[in-house]
Amino acid sequence: MLKAETADITDQRPASLTGPASVADPPVHGRLVRSAVSPWLGPLAMLTTQDLALPLWFRSIVVEGREWLPASGPVLLAPTHKARWDALLLPHAAGRRVTGRDCRFMVTLDEMHGLQGWLLRRLGCFAVNQARPSLSSLRHAVDLLAAGELLVVFPEGRIRRDAAEPIRLQQGLARLTGLAGGRGVDVPVLPVGIAYSRAVPRPCDRAALCIGAPMRLAASNREGAAAFTAELAAAMAALEARAAGLARAGRVGGSP
Image (cartoon, rainbow, N blue to C red):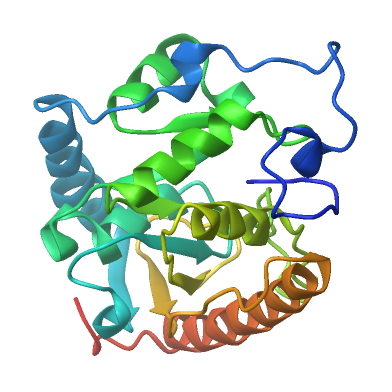
């Protein structure tokens, strides 16, 4: 969900991420950037989604590649984005019951208003302006990584239902990883492929998630960011194809 213009990611100013700075840049309100997981709402949401919603909707959920999830330290998941269900399946695959950590989602501004925004903030989500990521949003993301949290960023920035449509990524995720590296935080990026037995999941459909080997940004410059982004897109596409095969086949093996 992070989108930014091409620039040198070693520069810590807002202009390095969004182009020339301007007083007209749309701000992100501080309360939308700050996030924490409610000690009572977090477990309740986990119970509701993992024990009720997912089992009732899906016939089977296959997860491969959990062995790549680190037991501790920062980690950034970069999943493909196929449906709204993705946000519930990722905690199933990598959340507190698997890694002991909550998935901290970076979400778009329009998702953080009203009752939904109130709920998302208390589940550890925080907002980013896709057109012009604010420095406060990026700092909060780096702070979470520095604290050893599990951050989830959808690098496509939108739902892509057509499997034939190629994956197109902006360089924002590479830029974020570079900013973390500038603070001495080594961040492994794990590509994730998500697929369903139908493009729009229906009751009793099947879902599959494939987690890939960790990737790291080799160079904090434009060329390094471009190379990393291309490699990440290729890895996500391969994992999505693998997940699609599992979902179509209805395989029950793998990690439940």
